[in-house]
Amino acid sequence: MQTLRFATLVLLAATLPFATRAQTADNPSVQINKDNRTIAISATDHAEADPDVADLHVGFTVYGATLKDAYKAASDSSNGITKAMLDAGATRSEIQSQSQRVSRLTDYEIKTQKGMKFSVQQSWTVSVDPKDAALILDAAVQAGANQSGDINWRMKNNIALDSEAIRLATEHARALAAELAKGMGVTLGKPLYATNSISNGFIAPRVRSFAMMSDNVEAKTAAPLAIEAQRVQSTATVQIIYAIE
Image (cartoon, rainbow, N blue to C red):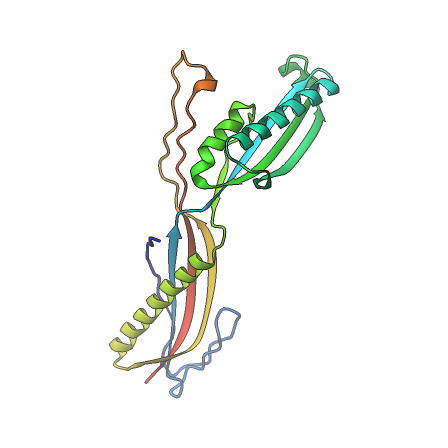
């Protein structure tokens, strides 16, 4: 697992003869006087990794002049899309229905849809191995999934990534505390208090390239989109109070 490291430093308290600091959930009470010899440090760092799950958002909308026609078209599309994804390597346990909706169109929509009066929409979330995302998404689109494409990238379990982010942030905090103690002419002691917070997200997406199709090639013969997974990251912020000697 590769990591990209950075830190921000906040000096919360030192050995100074002033008033008592207020206590909050994120800021423990620190008595600032000649008898309280502590250094408080806040540091932030993060770890990143390639995702091991791609959540594909797949869906379609079909229309019909009658409710029966619209529902028949939706049934054909729904079963055809599901079969195409299964044939491409997805499993039934990975395909989760998100929404189904049958609607009568507004007068304006009826005009734009050339007389069609009803619509049926359906969507799924399909959780697959990132390396299979492009193939399964392509199979769904070729089978009629005309409202598809969003992908969420994630880890099956964030424990390892979170732990690495906390380790890096803690190392940063200790290094900063040691440097501060050195500058003050004191010796850094043991940690007396520690807290942390974790957030998860994505590395900014890199440039993606897409398969292009010449004018004389039908859509059904186009290659799948060239999709590149975003790396996921866990960011940890730690606050540690050290004794100084």
